[in-house]
Length: 184
Image (cartoon, rainbow, N blue to C red; front, side, top):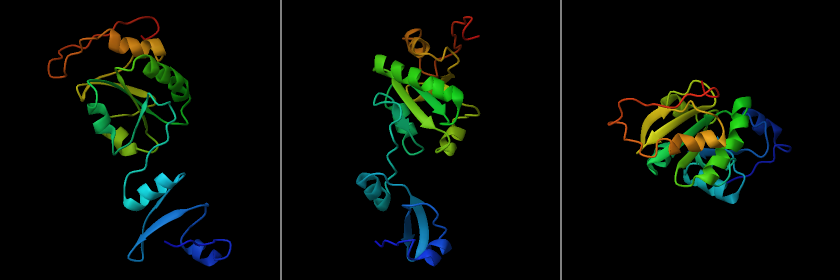
């Protein structure tokens, strides 16, 4: 492990395109491997050992934070899951965030997951996300339906309460949701 003071060794830092401080870079056999961010010692140790980074919890502890490493395991960890695919810059996403968090606090038996599509574009693409926010319901670890209800705490909770006996995707023939003036 080596530390470089870019104020003292400007030529080296310029060659390595280091423009922000602190910057952490991993080299293997003298060749650049990757850079990483580390806000804590745990982040730093995980990065050096090759473990995936632990995402920051922006939604509160009841909402699980998805990454491309853990999204499948998180979805499979509960028989009822609602995933919010979002972009931090999106105004509608910012409005949904507190409602989604409140729903997760109120309905702890359901699985609420948030995935930042600006950081994990591959995962969002794999789930067919083309706009933000996108909400998807999963049952027994399998995609069930796109959520198109109210983007409120009550709406998110109702998505599960209206369908308490959600069938597994193989058994589903028609997915029905009650249409109201607010969601249609």
